[in-house]
Length: 171
Image 1 (tube, rainbow, N blue to C red):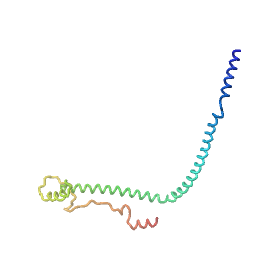
Image 2: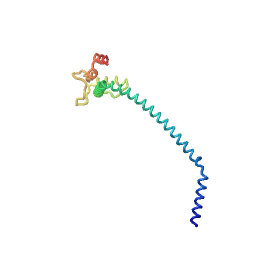
Image 3: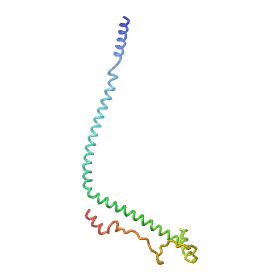
Image 4: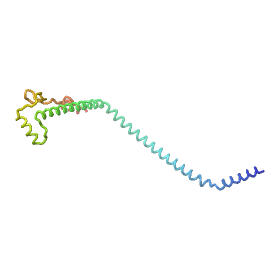
């Protein structure tokens, strides 16, 4: 009997809870949120389909352009390689010229880089005949004449202007 009373009491309590709950009030906001999310998902799907269609069109156009240019890629690669070789040769020539300038500065005993120092000090050095060092210093002179450092010729790397005109006409 006590059990039965307890069960009836529990049933009444649950009935009160269920009757006091307003399911429409609690479920409607959830349903509205779900509907909003579904609408946004549809919009997103539409935008995504539009982007896919546009990107497919762009890709088709650009892939065709790239494929049509592929014949020129080998020539472009060769030109870049030649330019790289040219830059390395210019760097090497520049280093040689710098060494030649250093030797000339040593010969003329130039340490002052002002106009006065550049003009007067070499003259004073030439006028003094006393040679203090017994070792032969490096020199840019051969048989008393200045020998310039051989430098690159652009035609060796890029061809002559006539060849360039023929190449540019064919492109």
